[in-house]
Image 1 (cartoon, rainbow, N blue to C red):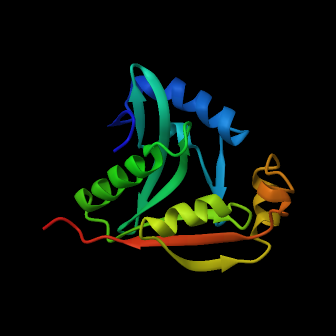
Image 2 (cartoon, rainbow, N blue to C red):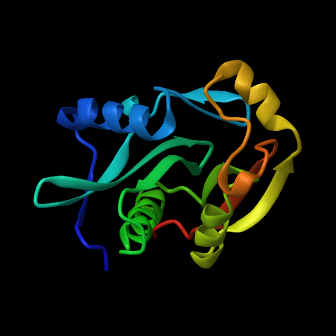
Length: 164
């Protein structure tokens, strides 16, 4: 169980979400598979404890799938990320979506491990996709975690059974 409580992002949270996205992602935008997202305007979930934000997830819905756009656990190893993913899977079911998907980069080994342990499967690799993404978001660094050059996008999916 997460250290805090999970709740949907509300309109009153938009300023906090925008600040967190800028701080954590280096811009007000996120880019995946050639699409630009504005996370502060998207639906999502916050994990809070005593008024302090411990985690944030934003998502978009299209074509019977829910796409995680951003996810951040500000305190790792305390169940925050898992609580956000669980809330998102429940939301996907409630919306009648048949899968939850996300895109990450080849350097993000901790995220790849995290998602696979929560039922996500690798479904696509786009070699050199980050070169194109940098045209839309120049803030994407050249080198990421563990000194790995950031070059490729990886898609992961988790199938969910819609609520009956």
